[in-house]
Structures are given as structure tokens and as C-alpha cells.
Image 1: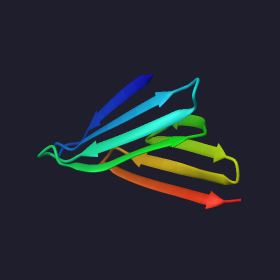
Image 2: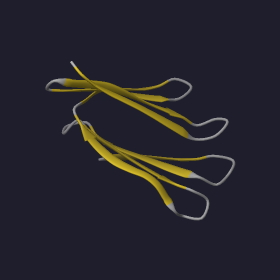
Image 3: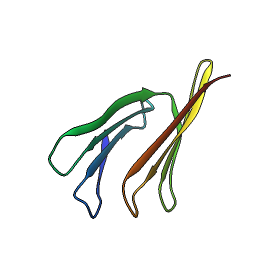
Length: 84
């Protein structure tokens, strides 16, 4: 398991954990007070790329999707999951 911790200028923290062998990803996002805003786990990751932001592609059975994480100017997470 590998972990990447990101913090924005407002004190929010996002922890991205991933395991290459099990193809799993977990995202935990907390605000500046330590209140958890988001915590989800997904399996079936097929690609993780870092280019100005973080993008994770998923494919598991009949579902496919993409999660995009932006770090600047503020943290944001966009997750799209579709049935194929």
C-alpha cells in the first residue's frame, strides 16, 4: 500500500492510498478542523496518472469510470462511474 498526502492553502488534507497488486484506491478528505468530508474505497483501478492533478481510471465488470483530483487552487474531487 502506498500513500500520498496532499494539503491545500486552506488547510484541507486529502490522503490517497493505493495498492497496485489489489488495484484498489482509497480517498480520505478532511477539512481544516479535521472533519471528514469524503471517505471512499474503490477496486478495479486500471491507471493512475499525475499531470497537473491526479486521475484514476477504473474498470470492474460492467462499470467503468474516472476519478479526477485537483490540488490547486483548492482541493476538489470529481468521480464518474458508469455502467457499460
